[in-house]
Image (cartoon, rainbow, N blue to C red; front, top):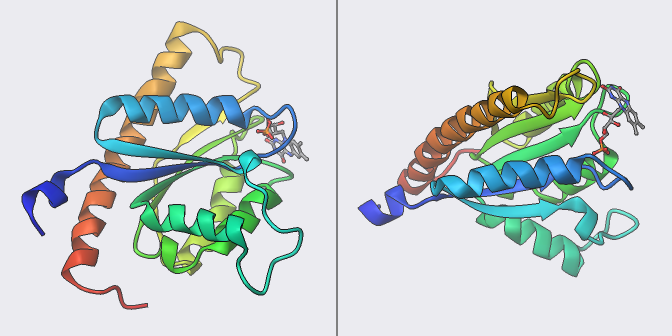
Length: 191
Ligand SMILES: Cc1cc2nc3c(=O)[nH]c(=O)nc-3n(C[C@H](O)[C@H](O)[C@H](O)COP(=O)(O)O)c2cc1C
């Protein structure tokens, strides 16, 4: 692998996992994607599940939307899942989208931005970890977890803390992403 390929920005897909009407996930996901894109070391592809029209039932053969979606997953070298917490889990729309991929997730890193009440979406994240383990992806320990009921969610200090945590997540995702890019190029993954 040449130097240019080794060091070019990581192709990072940011997936907004809520498609609920009046969702908070839209603003959170777009804010995060903006922070990531401004750094220059991640080439961001925003996949907002509210913008995809997937089949009503899991199809025998992938239709155009599913194929287009899995192509975007395939192109990505790392993922950030932006997920809310619904009844201690994550949204069904997100599970549907994750299940459309298989090889596309393999030997790639996955980081989480979560949000919810009090636990800040951590239960959703812990339920997503085994899903990505099954898919041979690597989940990151550190994420960004937002408590939507915290007293200060919009003050300058809170925003600065949130921004710093986002950068730590992106630093770590970058490390894993570049390392696994080289690993996949050096030898085929053994599934
Ligand atoms: C069906 C449903 C179940 C919820 N369950 C939880 C929960 O178990 N824990 C929690 O912290 N928040 C829970 N919430 C609050 C959500 O985390 C909060 O409304 C968040 O904004 C939802 O994300 P969204 O607006 O992007 O869809 C729930 C919300 C909904 C709609």
